[in-house]
Image (cartoon, rainbow, N blue to C red; front, side, top):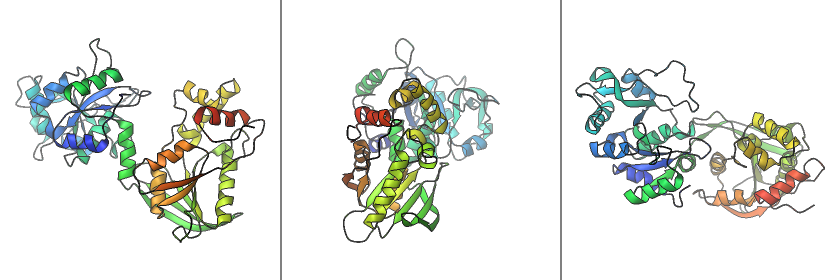
Amino acid sequence: MPTELSSVPEAVEAIRRGEVIIVVDAEDRENEGDFVCAAEKATPENVNFMLSGRGQLCVPILPEDCKRLDLSAMVPNNDAPLKTAFMTPIDIRTAKTGITAPEKSETILKMIADDCSADDFVRPGHVYPLLAKEGGVLRRAGHTEAAVDLARMAGLKPAGVVCEILDESGDRASRDGLSEIAKKHNLKIISIEQLIAHRRVSEKLISRAAEATVPTMYGGFQVICYAVQYENQTPIALTYGDLTAPGPPPLVRMHSSCFTGDLIGSLRCDCGDQLHIALDMISKEGRGALVYLPQEGRGIGLVQKMRAYALQDKGLDTVEANHALGFKADMRDYGIGLQVLKDLGLHEIRLLTNNPKKTEAFNLRGFDLRVVDQVPIIPDVNEFNKRYLDTKREKMGHKLPIR
């Protein structure tokens, strides 16, 4: 990763001014950097500069634009690894060949004109439209969606231009190489991960779908189910008492789902114990909230978690197993959970967690939401979870006693 990344607002402002920026994706995805600009700002100068990246110049657009231009998928069955949605390449009808930077600029600008139609273009051509998903990077973490998001956030038409950046050997430019290019040309550089986090904080993505009071062994909890725009997940808030009443900030637990620990009482982890300890502590205090997030296996999903368990049975620890499967040690994101807490009217909380990084993530996310205390939630140790807990303490920084 480059030593210094710009902020998302800085990048959006650059896009608004008509500048080209660099957007990088995850190192475990394409590990690629692209030149990106808004389609509205695709001047011949910008197009010519972006072509210096030596990748494929493409124009991400939304489904409605593809329909208006009568563009169809380049192949009927897209089996590319990342499902990049290439559509019919086109040129503006008035172009001689379509290959020059001015001709590509003219094609792109005509594509997004309000009065354009499919008849204004010939096919095949030299400009490659890409079909972006509605919902942008919240649905697909690709440069296609990032370009459309950035243009929309800049107040421009939701369409972009992208071109991969290659180095002198013809391979993908390294992170250090991308950083040097950004410095040389005074370009803003951001990551798709940043853009996802920014949108999950700055846009209201949740709405209450259903709520009811549920009696439990710990007392009566108000259960609120949320719908999440663009995402197929249902986060749940369990609240107890009056969260906005005067007094100490309420206890809050941000709990990621764990089928094995929460539902069938697995002894391999401490998740089920933490869930019940948290509910008990909240009810005894008289108020608080537990937000239940569908992030199985620290974000890798149940199937991959079972594969990680199989690797652990062969000697790997929980971090090594995730890495062996191609994942980070922790893939979770708390942006939606923070939106839930804000919907509950919270500003200051005491967070029930052993993970200091979770506390830092809360305080750095840009919400009017502050963790005033990290309250430990210590589970029992058994022969099956001891190594797991030791790894969380030694490799992931969790504040757990040595036992």
